Image 1 (spheres, one colour):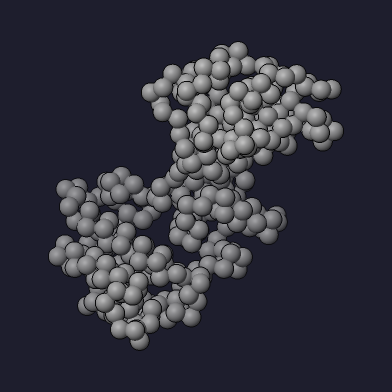
Image 2: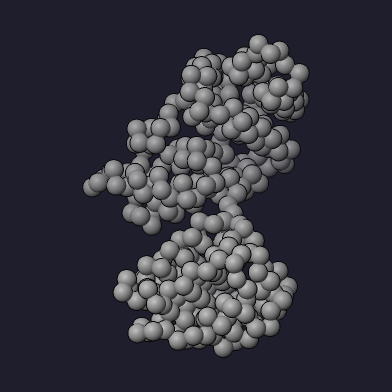
Length: 336
């Protein structure tokens, strides 16, 4: 987030680059930067004549560069935003490369190259990097999301514990826009307080602090049968909040990681966290797991999960079997 935060700071301080080439699989940062430019480059009176939002699907590079070279009318700057630009052949355009070398200083050109990245070997990418015009927005892995949540909260002056990060990550996945919206909503609700807890999340986002995939995983690791069955019963009564596909994904990831930990020559919390790329906060969970699940049992559990996943999709299962039936049968096999 450091590069993003620096860009945000400069934009808010009216220090604009002539070109923002915003690329990558993660749309969150690209959308945020484009919105910030719309809010800061021009005032409302200047936008009528000096702000142009163009779609790459409806234009070509020669037209875009021609527009970028124009002078603003009654303003120091003009803003040109190109949306849906991934279909444009930037790396095959000498016109665009020449513009990068000598951009119009009164134009701010923002290119939204979402869900795609330039070839790093090409001269265009090297030129954009050299000039400082390229911003790459990479998709986060699941295990990176809790740390991202922590950084976001810190930037907003909020304090959040590890369990709350895990709950949000488990429930909201890697949708950074949704996470950002929910955390901003919590900030407004907190008022003068700054502490995000599982109780706050439960009240305001609809995630049960006791009955969720995070707690199910913990109960399975500890072989806490009564808690496992309570959670599954809750899941059946609240299927929209707890879709079975997410439960299978969580548990397959859990047992795959347990399998990896069994094979590690050094089984310290620090090494487990490093090898699994997880927060050290959760490493001790795997030390408990390998005590309760042998290597042979772990392999069998992965097979049970895959079989149940197929049954949940209607393969080789009785037409009368419910989601709860499938989960309970699978969990019985895992826990015994």
